[in-house]
Every structure is written in structure tokens, then in C-alpha cells.
Image (cartoon, rainbow, N blue to C red):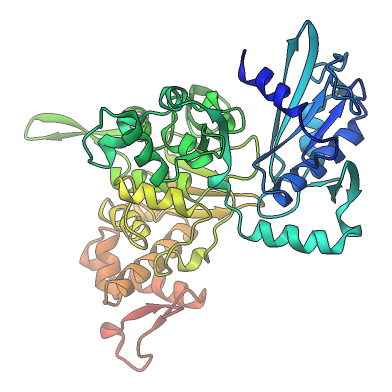
Length: 482
């Protein structure tokens, strides 16, 4: 018997007052379904459950399996499919999946609803909760709301169960534990119990009270053999798109990487490196290809997109877009630090467990040094400084191929000047005309051009002189925050 059928058998044994399970027969009112998803998700958090369930095909009072005619795959509201309609009206932290199957020849529809994280799940901007077997507005139960917020404050998305009630062999079948042991530099044990002990210690797997095991979100995201094996995480796959030219009109390659971030990272980087534009050079009669972007910068930015993404919204994941003259890396969520202080401020991550493990296995730099290297290697290659853009619910970082100084936009020049001053400051130095001229690869006779750029950057409020009374030729500059 498969896991869904086993789950239904266990659910129908529960009390009729269970707050994190609701049984229906043929009710298919979309408004009511949205309210139940909110109520059950919040109730799961309130009752310390990782998931809640909305089941069609079981009679509510008797818990008898009766079957259902409800079909969520064909239901539409206007011209919109039910799933999309629900996602549009539920809050961004609502996470659910559904499936159908038969028990005793009777059709069952199962909605699996993840517990609320960070904030109560809302439907049409209202939060619901289950009180006993009744669905209520959360705002009408102040004491419950306070307790729910207390639990939300201490919840972590990474520790939610991506799959649960698994035996040992299934855990090892779903996770690339061989890659895990290789990356943490520990000899692979031949004992299943020892393998599981390490996975549990790193919070990738949890042993349940019933003796079975659960794979956590961080476990699946980092080391799943196939992310598509985890329905709630399948859309967190990294998408890599290569375009013809510099617009999105014509797509050359479009790939979804169906593998955990850690165990699939090197393979992903090799793929990206293989399709990034390169420059042909001829040295002593030998022709070679030089990458258009520093590999260290690309690697660090891709790792940052994985680590610092907002994992809560469903249906979105990191995207890497490759154009002829730029590389765009976008992740869900906005930064937790001021992007003007991206170099000197210590980083903050929503996903501390994943970030720590990524650093431990050498995928990204130690805290605080990643962006220094990104900017340093872009300067070393005479590229414009990386550009960070913040949108309503995402962050995009753009790398540009080498552009002659004379063809750089004013924005590119000022941004490059500012980040050069930041890099100097964190290294215990100060920017001056010579260092900035060298940064752009310009000759000594370009001093006046660089002076004008420095003056423009000062006027923009991005940098300031160390001592305004110093003679112009000895003037040094600091970022505005120093």
C-alpha cells in the first residue's frame, strides 16, 4: 500500500475534533477551500504539526471512506484553474499540493498543506484558524493569535518536513548521501545507522516519534537526488536560460536543474561555464578562450542566490539568465541588509542552516568576504562593477562584460567608483585618483577624466574626501558611511 493510502488509513482513526485535518465529500466551493487552507496551515503551526490535510472522499462525522466526485484538476473559476486562483488569493507563505487516488475503488482527493511559517497564512487578506472542528477568523481569538505568533517567531522553514514517515532505505534512496560524505570529507560508512546519524546531526533528516524518518526542507534542497521527488520544493529548482543576443526575444537554451543545491552545485557551475560567452585571445601565436566574467565572481553570486533566497513563496526559484553582454542572477526575496553597505556589513540570511552548511562544504566564502571577492575580481578584469536591483519580491544582480571606460554609462562609472572606495576601505586603505584610474585600466594622462568622475560621485553623496583641505593631487576618499 502506498504512503498516501497509509496516511488516509491513519487520518480516519483520529478524533473528530482534530484541528489539523478536515474531511469533505463533494463540497467544492473555491472560497471555502481557500479559507480552509489558511485555517489548516495556521492550525498545523499552532498544534506543532509540520503538515495539515484537507481530504475529499471521507464522511466527516463517521470517517467512513465514501469517495468523491470533486476534481481539483478540472475546477475553474472563470477561465483560471483552481490551483492558480488559490495561489493568487492566498498569502505568499501558503504552500500546498494535491493528488488523487483510489481506496477500495473509491476516489480520494488529498490536499497536503504545509504549516505556516514567519506569519499566519491568509486568504483574501484574512487569517483563519481551526477551533475544535470549526473554521474561525483568527482575529476573533486573541489568545490563540498571540500563541500562534509566538510559535511562528521560532519556526524555521528549513526544518519543516519535505517528506515524512519514511523508512531508512527510502531516505537513502531519495538523498545523495554519498555526495554529502564526500563534501564533508568524512569516509562513507557502510553502516546505515551511522549514515543516518550524520544526516540527523546536520538537520537533513529527523527521526520521528513513530520510529520512521522525515527529510527536512534543507535536507531535500541541499542533497536530493531529484528535487521533483518533493512536490512542495519542485519549483525551487534553479533555472538557467541562455538567450540569443541581449534581449529575451529568442531563447537558445532553457534548463531546470532537478538536483539538490549542494550535490548538484559543481555540475551546475560547469554547465554555466560552458555556455557563458568567452573572448578569443592570441598570445605568442597560441589562441585561447578567456571567460567574459571572473569565475570566482560568478560562483559566489550563484551561491548567494541559493543561500539568501526567500524560500517561503511557492512557484519561484533562483534564475540565471545569460545574454551576450550581461549575466543576470535573480532570487526570490529582498536583501536583509542595506545594499549600499553590501561590502562592509556582515551578511544576514533567512536560511542560516543552509548557509552554514554551504560554507562548511566550501561552496561559498566565509561570512562577510563573498562580496569583497565579487567586486575585487570584477575590478581585476576591468569590468563595470556588479549592479544590484531590488524589486517587490526579488533581487537581481547583473554582471557586465568588459566595456571601454568611454562607453560606460554615468551610472556604471559612479557605481564602480563607489564600490572601489568601499573595497579600499574594508582593506584598510583609501581610494585616490591613481587607484581609481588603475581600476579602470586607464593611462596616466586620464587623471583629469578620473577627477571629474570622483567629483560627480562626491556630488551624488556616495563618497567623501578624507580631508577636504588636502591639496587635490594628494586627496583621498572614503565611502559615505565611513
